Amino acid sequence: MYLSGGACSILVITGGKTIKQLLHIMSEDDTVPLTTLQCFLIFSILAIVMSQFPNMNSLFGLSLVGSVMAVAYSTADTSFDNIFNAIGLIAVAFRGNNLILEIQGTLPSDSKNPSSKTMWRAVMISHVIIAVCMFLVTIVVYWAYGDKVYSGWGGPIGNYLKLFEQDYSKRSACFIHLTFIFNCLCSYPINSMPACDNAEMVYITKTQKPCSFFVRMMLRVLLGLVCFFVAVGFSFLPYLAVLIGAVGLLVTSTYLCASPSVLHVVASALRLADKGLHANFFKP
Image 1 (tube, one colour):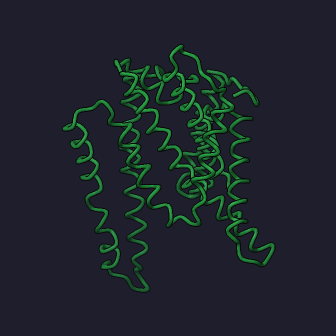
Image 2 (cartoon, one colour):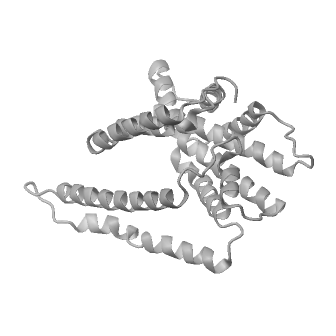
Image 3 (cartoon, helix red, strand yellow):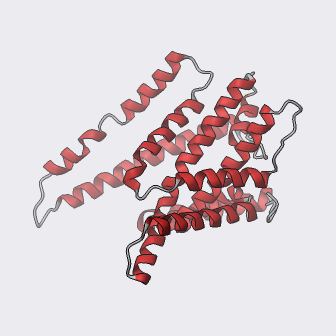
């Protein structure tokens, strides 16, 4: 519930700010006809409507659309060959995934040497390799851009365009913002599903009755309203993302991530002490 609700609240903040930036771009006189609160509300209503899927399996199509939107806004104003070269590199990175189940099925296993030990060792090694790759990318990007990424009201896409200072046309900028908003909307039901499943389980346990369509719909509406309330009341939540993620890391992977979680908490606390926190409660 903690991780699911926190992710959805941050999506409301991110998507709402991007809607406001989109309206600012579309405006002829550089004014925004809606307030930030109204943009949050619009995003929340759309997200609640899109979260009415019964289970995770039914989200396949939505997940596919979200992936396409992510590729679309990431590759806007990029040449055809660069786009497919990048997709090809991603395909190479995942080229062995379809063999994982076959490898697991053919591992020798007995009571003295169960295959679970081999698989656990493989998971540990793969996570170390992933961590090395991610930290290298992070270090290089920070070395190149440092703290140049402005975290103002323009939303992540608006800040991205400001950072690279490219001459985007109005149509291109609107396309990038729209696809990013759709990506956030598609991500919302996926992130909210664990909280929805948990709420349904509590309902079934308490009432000893199956969860009807109406009850399932109202539970999702209620959870969506809670996320909207959190987003409005704590619109500075993205500034605390590292701290929230550090605690969530410990909740998710207690044994593997205890030390990194403590380090993330310390780093987040030091950054907040250095940069400060502009807490605007209920003033998005």
